[in-house]
Image (cartoon, helix red, strand yellow):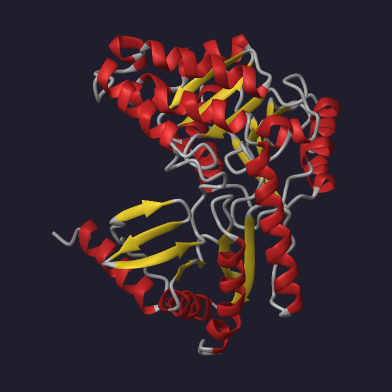
Length: 398
């Protein structure tokens, strides 16, 4: 029998990736503090985390987690629909719905599971007479793309932020039930989707707008309610909002918010909600405290805006190839994957953790350093990074 060995194929694929300078590796962080961490006994200033408000190590969250564990235990013990839905989960869902201006919210264990659940519930049901259409920005997060691919829907991807192209693709299939899904803030570029224009397009074409606001929640809009609030868009304008809890909120998990009908439909049909253990209720208790802090964190958001302006001004003075972004995600476009890796290694030697983003996460020829800022950073942290960047780039192979 000459059947191919799947594990051997996987090993050869990993080896090929390593030969191309694209190999990924895991490292264990030993200690974290606001804006810093320790790895292998060395201290680093972290410019690659998504802890935008600096809440992950906030003492009030730590206390809320401890109290939640004392009250509820560690695990939820079951799926939400069996025995796993605790009072802490319900309170968090109510708080998230109120914060984002939606009727209801539903918790998921991760952002990937939330996006997969929405796609499967809306586009993957067997009671639909014809496959739907899912239209997505080409730079959407992988979870949105994979979620659509897991359904029977036709997936079409329009050029980044090109509303006219999206309109042409919608008009080409006027009879298909259509979902237009976009990131609110694009995770690798840091720019914001043209949400007002996309909402107007969806109203005109009878399509449903879904926004993945993983990187906008807590950072943008009044009280940090996200990119949709920043654009002044309501639940009627954008019926489906997905947000994650492990970035600006500093905890973990995700949620979908929208109408009562949407949430009830997800409870019935979203397999990634129905068939999984609920998140720990103690984590929900900590996240409820994080929502309270984030809503009141205008000072942290102002601090973040100050640091973004400081970094961009300094980068411009150094003529660094910084991509346009007004969010905490500040990508430095280097093009070559090996150059990005070498630059990240040089920065690590200097005491900074910065992510080297390479294909397939970004297209070929668009490798970059993904620099992320946090309200926990000090001015001198940003200034030291700016001092280190030219030396790191000069140390690369190109």
